[in-house]
Amino acid sequence: MTPLKTPASFWADVDRSGGLDACWPWARKSRLPKGYGLVGYRRARWQSHRLAYFLATGHHPGKLCVMHHCDNPPCCNPAHLSLGTVRDNTLDMISKGRNRPARGERNANSRFTADEIMRLFLHPAPTRRTAIEFAVSERTVYDIRRGNTWRHVTNFHGPYLRRRS
Image 1 (cartoon, rainbow, N blue to C red):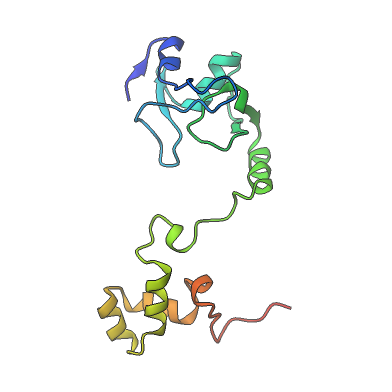
Image 2 (image 1 turned 30 degrees about the vertical axis):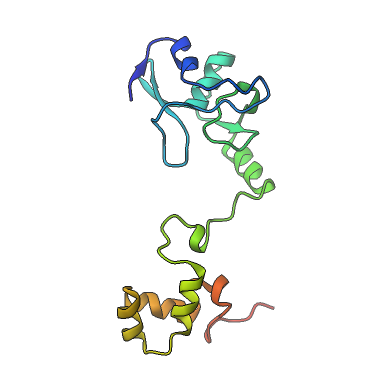
């Protein structure tokens, strides 16, 4: 992460080619895991959208969240940014339906597709042999077959789960 010397050098790294209403993505490679840009400015590390807000408004966001109306983490367009509390940001996330964790193969840590899970779930061999064949732990096979994991694929809710009334 190379520190920036001036606001002009920050805006040079923002793609503003789409026009005033479009998202202006952070164009540098320095990014945090969820896509937020990362930049050094005045001896501090900033997320690019927070620095964009600060440079555009002159107001330091402090402990407040800089929220995206566009829900695009790399966006640095000040017209798409506003300040809010953590509660405001959470309510915004819920109202837009972004509060659901990625399940199944949409999860970045998933090793299996839904089809592979169904093959494992329906595999006739005992747990130990199934685990060896699929190159997973016995616990993984057990959890899938009991409905502890991948329940949305197998539609199996396990023998020990209580019914909600």
